[in-house]
Length: 201
Image (cartoon, rainbow, N blue to C red; front, side, top):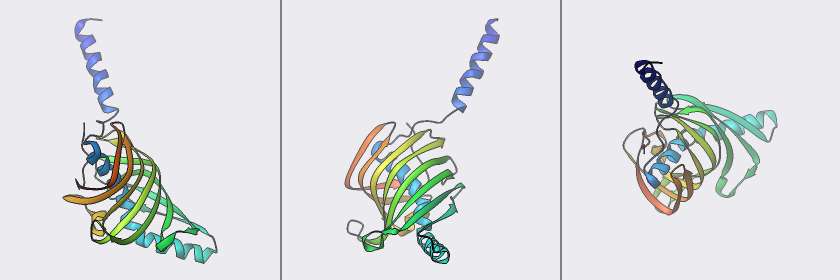
């Protein structure tokens, strides 16, 4: 094999490796919060109509569990099920949400499963009516970013934030989010993050 051929093979291998995955998620605590926020958007955006649909479905069938699915902003979907015998205080419902190629920013897909407990209430830090949820589970991220988030965190945001795909969004976080960068701990921490993008390392 001559030198030119070896260089061509090496170049092809390098391009193949680059094409196999994107960069790691960067941005430290803010980056992890951005990824968790983006994952929560299709859930928060559809939570009101989902709760209504699930309850109607269960009442119509007599079942105590029900499931629905919704499209994500760009492509893919989230599907969720709820156990209607397990309603928490203040009307909190617990959902198991499956992500199937869920793409909110046109650049990255989420896959995996996350457990949510959701409600709407006045957040004392944001001082306004907010979407408040806990997230527990692990999602892979594939696209421009090739990474994961493993969350056990409470997240609060303004209602309009669930539909935001640009500009700044204020979040209140309490708990832990792990990524390949490490484990990020939040204690009722308020962060301003950018919607519609994920930072790279």
